[in-house]
Length: 383
Image (cartoon, rainbow, N blue to C red; front, top):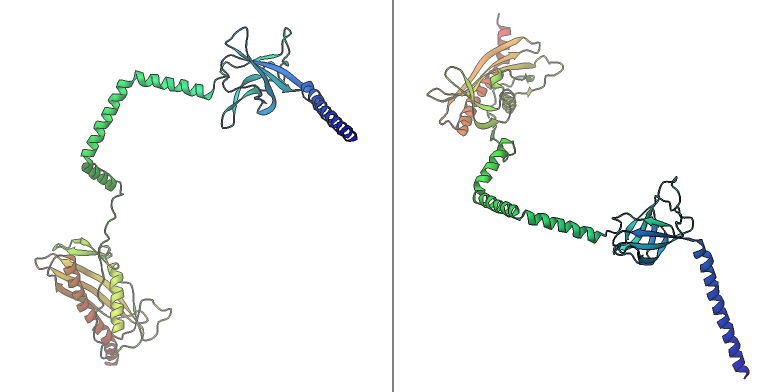
């Protein structure tokens, strides 16, 4: 009996605690929520798809309550009235706008309230009814409804213009067929336009030829000092890298596509210096700050470096030379010339002929430069 009494005591205590908890929660709910909430109704003028009781109420994007009830307006079945439970102090004014907002990926409906002018009057009950907002006429339009209406309008446009669309598609088919048949001509036209615009295929670079350095036997007597070879002078027509021809009346004309490795005056200077160096005659292309007593200067003037167009094609290399002392006095001067028949009119035959003519002229120059010191000494010893 004592055991049963103890169980009854414990059971009664637990039941009392449960009842107390339920009462406390009910008291909190009554005191903390319902007593501090405001009720507002919103009247929607059309469908409110997706809106259900318990849905959120947003004021300027912030949740401030929920939808407590939804009902069809008994006076006008075309309208739906939503009852909203809002947090106390929510600034709902007469110009506050109401609408339907979509929340989340699934598009859950919510009532959206947008704050009005601060100077507007608060929303008050009228005629013993709860305060009511009239929603915008398009507030209940869902995205699905808008899409369906848009598709309906597109379908109507396509139906009204079906013949015109069919004719347009037929024209496109004919045009594409014509393009396919004339693809080759179209490629040629596009290539021509690209070339006119400077975007054609890259040009093949012209062949470049160099003068061979004449290999001459060394002179019997090597002159003392060094020879400074200045930059040769030449008329403007000879300051080129092109292969030149000369007509009987003296007209110079570039021919072919080949180029020399340098402009003709510079090429003449370099090759003469290399040839004299190979013959053991010391040369330099840079004038020293002070000339030695035995140093000399070689001044060159290029006169011809071309292929004559006479009946007998002839390669002609002609230049004049002045040998000056260290003090700048002219010791000797002479004209040097090399000529060689050109067997054909192509670039390669012309280059070979000019190389032979150049070797002959430079050979005479090398011998002449080596002999000048002896002649000067002999001239100074003569009475």
